[in-house]
Length: 404
Image (cartoon, rainbow, N blue to C red; front, side, top):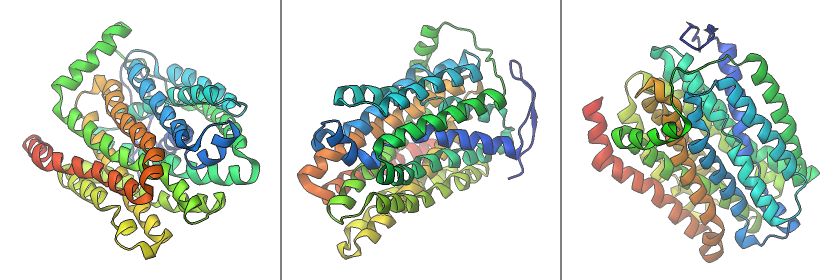
C-alpha cells in the first residue's frame, strides 16, 4: 500500500500518513482488541479455578463484550468532543489495571465484574480507527481503514491461539498478566506517536449522547449496516465461544491444538483490505451480497459431512471469518462517508450493535451446547446471517442501489 498524505485540519497536528504510521495504527488496534478474546478459548480452564459452573462459563466472554458495548456507547462518542490521544491513553491505563486484576481474581463475582471492565476499557481501538479515517484522503479511505481493520481482525483471531498456548504452558492467569504488559507497551507507543486531534464539535456530554438517537433515526444506511454486522457477529461469537468446548469434549484436543485451530482461522482476516479496495472502487452493494451469502453458507462444511471432523470445523471457521470481516469493513467504509464531524458517534453506534450481537451469541453458547451439542449451535449460528441476508435482499439492497 502506498498511501501517503499530509493532512492538516483544524484541531489536528499536521501528519504525514505514511505506511509506517498506518502499520502502527494496525498493530495498536490488534493489541487492544485482543483483550476481548483472550478468555474465549480458555473458559474451560478459568471456570473451575474460580468456582464457576460450566453452564455459566460463557458469561465471562459475554460480559466482556457487554462491557465493550457499554464503552462504545458511552465513551467513544467523546472522540467527537475531547482531544483524541488523551482519551485513548486514559482508557488504555484503565485497561492495564483491569487486566492485572483479572490475573489475581479468585471469586466468580469479582472475575465477572473485572471482565466487564476489561471490555469497557478496551474501546480505545474505536477512537483510533475514526482518527485514521479522519487523516486519510477521501480517495483511499477504504484502503486505509481496510488495512487497519486487518490489524484489528488479526488481533481478534490471533488472541485465541496465543491465549491457548500461554494457558497450556503457564496457566490461564499468565494470559492476563502478559496482556497487561502488552497494553503498557501499547500505551507508551500511543503516547509517543499518535497525533493530537481536538474536534471542532462543541456540545455537552449529554447533548452528545442525545444526538446518537438523531443519527440513528435519520441515517438508514447506519441502521441497516449495524443490523447486518450485529447478526453476523452474533454468529461469529457463538462459533468461537462454542468451538473450544466442542474440540475439547468431542475431539479431545489440547490447548495447544486448539490454539493451532484458531491460528488457521486467522486466514479470514485477509478479506479486510480486499473489502476496503472493493468499497473504494464502488462495489459495496455487490460485495455486501457476497459477504452475507458466504456467511449464510459458512456452516455447511461442518454439517453436511460429519466424517470431515475437525477439517469441516476448520473450513467453517475460515469461511465465517472471511465473510464477517469483509462485511465489517464494507459497513465502516459506508458509515464513515455519511458525516465527517460525527465519525466517532457513527462508529460508536455501529460497533455497539456489533458487540451487542457478539455478546448475545457468546451468551447462547453454553446453554445451546448443553442442550443440543454442536448441531444445535450450528443451526442457531446459521440463522443469524440468513436473517441478515433476507433483510438485505428485501430492504437493504434496493435502498443501497438507489443511493449508490
